[in-house]
Image (tube, rainbow, N blue to C red):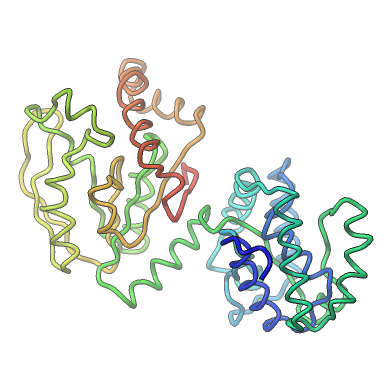
Length: 360
């Protein structure tokens, strides 16, 4: 197949799956799928409030259908979240926020889009779709001449399938993360999920909410800061060296990975000593929250990796509120630079399967 890049190979898989699922696809529907695969929603959300009102209005016109999957894959880390399935599973405020965040984060290029159109052409020539290669060329001629704008679904597709969805980056979505965690509980016990990310992004708050609402067990990386004798220049020079990951692995991750409880003594920052023992009881999902949770020496022990980021102005406001001027200055001058060096060295935002924007 022309365009043997991983992105084009993935797109061919997606196109074949959609051709089977939606046999009434017309040429413009195939082009629309390729366009969304490359450009996502195709536009920035300049007015989130207006976008939310439009989403609510569309949902009001869309009949709920529990038989419809919550999402379908369109490749490139993007999914269509199906509006007939969102009731009770994906709050509209969260969906609109994720839609806007996806539009900000996801970019595409015209050269890549044109390369992907060649994949669509080849599959049409192979007879994969209900439309012919000639029909596709007749559509593409004026479409390419017009500069390749965003495309609407065909009247036939709308009549047959009543499409109602939003395109988002799957990695932006807390509801889709929860869907994955639930699905994994049928395969392994416990599911171990790391929640790493920037300070003041809301990691501890989110973990507590998931513990309260879903019964997750929670382990805190803050309980494993370095003891005084470990705080050497050589240790701080290591990306992620600002945590006792060796002790965390032996006392928490390995016992949990074996399906048992974990007993450990948290480090008390006020006394500089280890406090009384605590126990983390194994649960279907165990969430390890805190900076350095995804340390390279811990990475392979998790089933799911999550990165929580936060806009700089919100991070600053939250640190000032939480720590006061003096405490916040310590973060800006010491802890945040250490964190950022670790994030960059380990490429966490790129490697984590989910990258959520807090506070959630």
